[in-house]
Length: 177
Image (cartoon, rainbow, N blue to C red; front, side, top):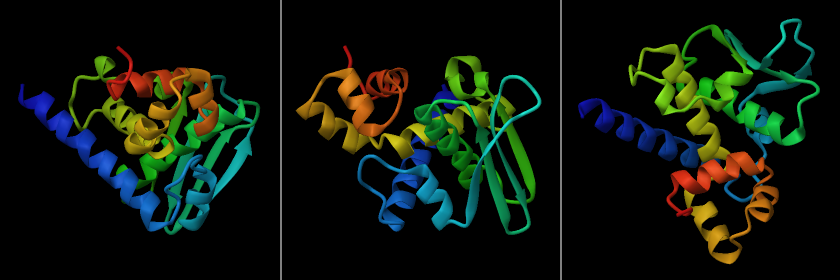
């Protein structure tokens, strides 16, 4: 049970951090643009063609230089989520030089696939996914929008995320019964 409580506490911390970052940069309105957030933090975002199949994005930090690369031919909504996910690594995990290379499976990783060990690489992916969801779909903004319009497609378009991402977010927020 203690793992669950520490997991829940960690997710609450991540949610607060994403909100604080958005508010600090005056970006707390929908749709949130993760490229603008990256740029105001001095992070370069570029499209890339990866030689290895299945890579959707990566973030690399070398000194003060941080770069995010996203798969060139992914859909715009997928790129937005990948960029937000990579920003999660920047704000949560990259205190020193290093990098994260994320494949398609990492962007769909959820807690059921993790052992709740905060040092585990898969848990860092879960954290970055949650950060991305909080960044692109802040809870209070989603709840407010949901009160006005319960149509999944319409909400996904409003937040510029996939229907799948919005469905997961609505479910996690307890809005889908």
